[in-house]
Length: 121
Image 1: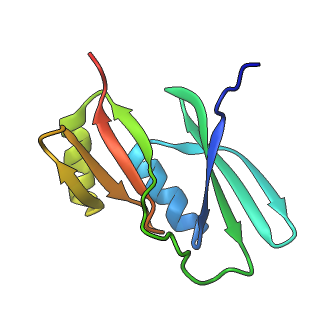
Image 2: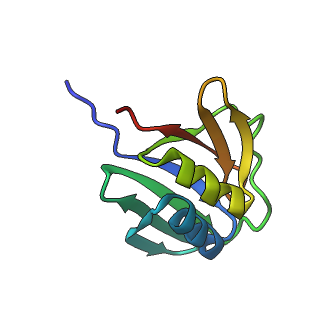
């Protein structure tokens, strides 16, 4: 058997705010959308990978999500690390940096951590 990872789901409290963040911060764009009774699911992707980020908005969940200790994250490799860092610094979304490892983390509007690493040369 072969398993291929296809998407990761994050529940969001403000879908439009999250869509704007992911487009600006990580160049992710809406690939498709499902509208259901009391929910909207939007899949985000870009040209760099077939992996998608699924954002789920639930009508009956207006409060912030409890992310526990935030001991999980999704990682992104970037070809221009310095330009990405500058953009994220301007956006004010960098939450943790580890210069010794050459990585940093940003947070989305709901508090999910996203790791930024330089692409392997």
